[in-house]
Length: 332
Image (cartoon, rainbow, N blue to C red; front, side, top):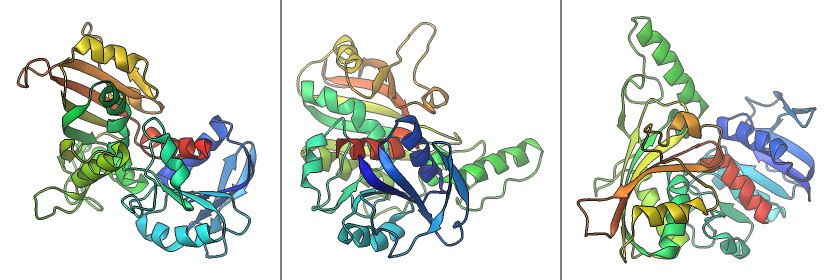
């Protein structure tokens, strides 16, 4: 049991999911502190029947804190996570600040739990799209090494935070009422539209989100030889990301073999009913811990018997963020 646990960014979408999971999973902590910006300080949030007051995050916030979940963005993590670590607090960080730092373990508990032993005070949660992809891909890779992954993502508003979820809701109401949509945080109309993920595009033509999926998978799998290409798209879904995956294996593999492996894989639920065409959907993945996997079929365009195509969906706020962080802490 931890003596004191802190949630940094407690009033955001992921922060609130952390708080909810602390309660529903019966996480053992004698005390919980909620930390956020000065603007959010003073808000009250219920946890285990108690009403906790959100405190302003400062450099002195981590005295006596054993464990801190950070979900307040990369800038806050870069400034305060090292402060927390120096105070003797173990940090589980949900931002991109430390993911590719060689000294910081990047963890998905179903994939590389042993890497937690290497931490020096900070552990990193991968990007949400990466987490949702690797949970079903890893057990397949262990059974039959994967040579190539082509991923196309359908990313929900939840991946960009509560303010973008609110923007999607507001635009949807406006458009249905015959009013023009008013983009605020995103560059284009979001309601009834989709567009390339709004992270910056590099010289190679890939955006930051797509490169995260490549580099983070290589780091966690301890294998840079897997060829990975991703296309990340923002879609007008409130919560839960979906992905179309094409996997090329070293040895021949059948769809039935894939289903059998995934049926026993932790964190995975196979939803693959060809009649009545019931496959993974974000509306069913929302609020679920497992990544839903279906549309499992042979890739007719690939080397005979070596390639599989599938469709997956996972809750970005849970397994793609807060739940993965809680599971890391449970390993600790």
